[in-house]
Image (cartoon, rainbow, N blue to C red; front, top):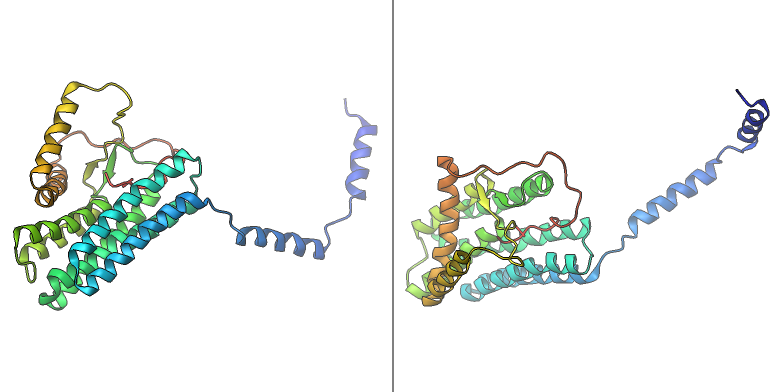
Amino acid sequence: MYDFEEGSKNVSASISKPPLQPSSRNHTRKRRLRDRLHVNIYVLPNLVTTGNLFCGFFAIIQSIAGDYVMASYAIVAAAVFDQLDGRVARLTHSTSHFGAEFDSLCDLASFGIAPGVMLYLWALQPFGRIGWLVSFFFVACGALRLARFNVQKQVMNPAYFQGLPIPMAAGIVASSVLAFNDLKWAASGSYILLAMTSLLGIVMVSTFPYRSFKDLDFKHRLPFRYLVFGVVLIATIAMRPEVMLFVTFMAYALLGAIFGVLRLGRPPRILAQNRPDDDDLHEDLGDE
């Protein structure tokens, strides 16, 4: 039964409530705009990400100066910072969308522009226009790879990457400098490096599935063969680190491309629903 007395009270209360004045609306709108402009961020993980950016910028400076070995080590250091920022954010419970976007921008500088500039000055400059266009192709594909990851990271299976991760592509470039320097091979005008740069750009924007190994939980027991494989891999790299790192990274890139072209292996599972957790806000090197 309808309560006429209660209903009349509600109607009278709604009528007696004064409408929002234009000055109050403007004040509310200004307060919301002020809250948007004053963004609070987590300092520690973003400082680690800034270390990634610093190493990438330092690599560019060293490439311009002609010290390509030091530039390669700077790119490797940037990859270490890229690994650490996501871990630090998760350990301190300070993951944020700001940190994820900042991480992507720094990754473009450290793993896209820095290796692209180094490749052109170190090996591709004798090719003229083709050389710098191929270097730009590498940078552009890296940017597209990062943008695609940002919009697909919550629907893709975290055990796989779609396309070669940009930190791995930069690692291949950096290790190629160290390998060529160790083997005393001439890099300037090398058609091998020209083809490698083009192929790296293609596999970055491809849909080939690359294992991220995020599904392996080393805190729990695993079969004994994993330990044997790890020992063999460490011993192999230790034989000649500069060369074997390049071979190992290239094998990862080539095997993923071959498996993708021939459609071998199990295709990655696409998640049915978006995962709103922040654990995958950062892309690793093998965080993309």
